[in-house]
Structures are given as structure tokens and as C-alpha cells.
Amino acid sequence: MGHGLIAWIVIGVIAGWITGKLMKGSGFGFLMDMVVGLIGAVIGGFIAGSLGLGGVGQHGLIGSIIIAVIGAVLFTFVLRLFTGNR
Image 1: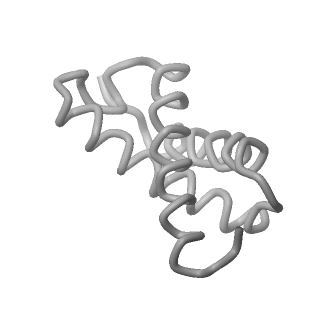
Image 2: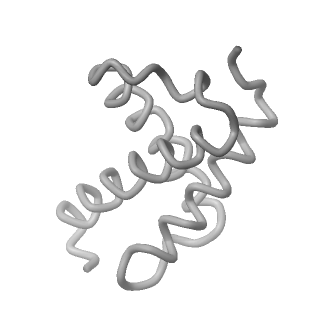
Image 3: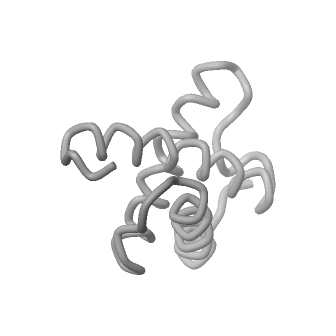
């Protein structure tokens, strides 16, 4: 069962906030952390699906947040490589 729009926003906010705390340096701000979290959810879902683990919406809220955080950390790492913000 997939998540609704409100659940995706909550997942994005939580994943972005956790990623901002996990990565060295400051975050991107509340709104951009949420965007990074949502993009991370897409990236994490793609990676999890490619590895045969299922998509983001198939693991419940906690599993979706964990997958979204992993994707957001990867996305933040790549983003900081291009922007030079380390």
C-alpha cells in the first residue's frame, strides 16, 4: 500500500531533517531540507527497487523514512560535490 501526499511530505521533512543532522556542516534550510528529503525518497526508492528490496511505499512509515534518508544522504553528498559546500 502506498503513501498519500501528506505522508510523503512528512517523510520528506523527517528524512531531510535527519540528513541535515547526519551530514557534516549545516543543512540547506527547512524548505530545501524537505525538498532534499523528497528527492532522497525517490532516489532511495529507485535504489531499493533496483536491489529487489521493494519501493519506498512498501515498507511502512519507518522503513520509508530509512530508505528516504539513505537516498537523501546520497543526494546531499552528490549535491555538495557539485556546489562545493562541504
